[in-house]
Image 1 (cartoon, rainbow, N blue to C red):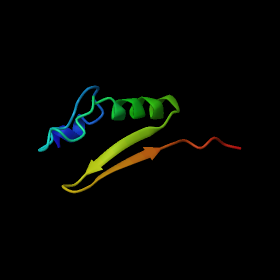
Image 2 (cartoon, helix red, strand yellow):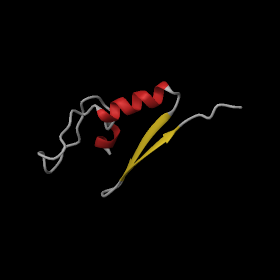
Image 3 (cartoon, rainbow, N blue to C red):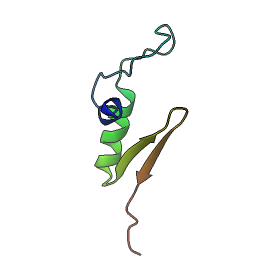
Image 4 (cartoon, helix red, strand yellow):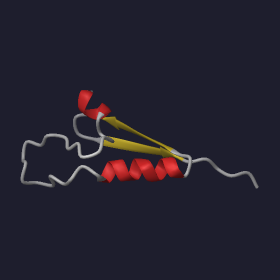
Length: 63
């Protein structure tokens, strides 16, 4: 749970049992979160042992 709360932190990479696989810079989710916020949306993550689900909510403009 502590790792999940930091998933959108800049430069944070969740420790991996195989460090040579997709280490990355830890910026991808931070940039996605900022983009979603710029368009007045929200993003959340839910995780289980085998799956992670990201939910993006966007406002619909009235016609």
